[in-house]
Amino acid sequence: MAAPKPTVYLLHGDDALAQEEYIGRMLKKQGEAANAAMNVQRFSTDATGLAEVSQTCAALPFLAERRLVILERPGRWCDDADRWPRFQDLLESLPASTALVLVEPGMLKEKSPLLRWAAAHGPSALVRAFAAPHGRSFEDWLVHRAQAKGVTIEPSAAQLLAELVGEDAERADQELAKLVNYVDAARPIRLGDVEQLTPFHGQTDVFAMVDALGKRDARTALTRLQRLLEDEDPHYAFSMMTRQFRLLLRAREAIDMGLNPQQTLGVHPFVAGKVTEQARNFSLSDLERIYHRLMEIDLADKTSQIQLDAALVGLIAAVAG
Image 1 (cartoon, rainbow, N blue to C red):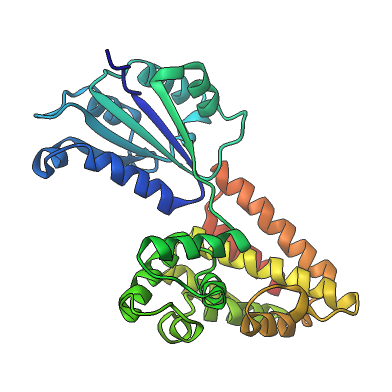
Image 2: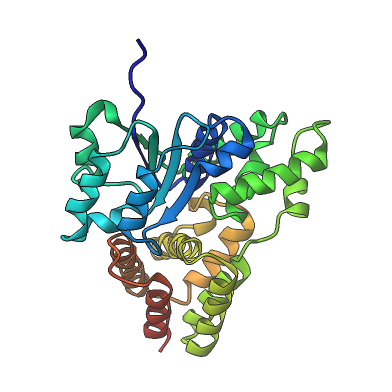
């Protein structure tokens, strides 16, 4: 006799692409497309109440073995003293015909109520962590991803692509798809291919915003930030800003130690040159203060204590003002 399937799938981590691909594999198992569409619902705690999710989970599937209910950002309900007990009741009363997929953007800490609940409910709860690769690991990920698409990518091309997409796996996969079509599996993806086909997603606005900050030009800095937020998700914009100031901090440290930042940063020469130039507009203490504030914003965002875009506007206004 086959073991019963889990009724709760807890997916957490900052690799959104891997999470979505895991969900995609679950969707394929739903069977015939027409029936599958009638047995899949997706919610977010940002816009949905607990009662609606509970009602959906209790409904029987239509001409299918299971109903798939996807709930994004479930951690918000764990921090609510009123909702968390009721949410636990929902998790523990799910029928075998329902698979509730909890999708949390960001790695959960060991003391997370969700992880503790899952650990205590063994077979009925399945946990999968998806940590996004960074640095050299991200470049290695690009190499393997290209191979999975039937082509090879040269190391220098992988490094530049990682720089241009800001280590965003989803964007990288989209750009890889374009590059694969361009070379048509006839040859490896080369540095020139990446330079020709991959735009600097939002990097222009990030560079211009940092330039304005270095000159204490609050108006221009805020204008560039607003443009970035119009074109990009606030979390992606935040990741780009954090990475930029981390590089600036490392460059400033190198300058103060009498080293060549372009040789120590380990990034593409174009980016290294721009970062080195900008780092000279800040003191080390300025950059440490900005970077620490970004880390505080990150923590507050993950615990739902702030509105991210407003916090970034406040930071830039304070720094440039």
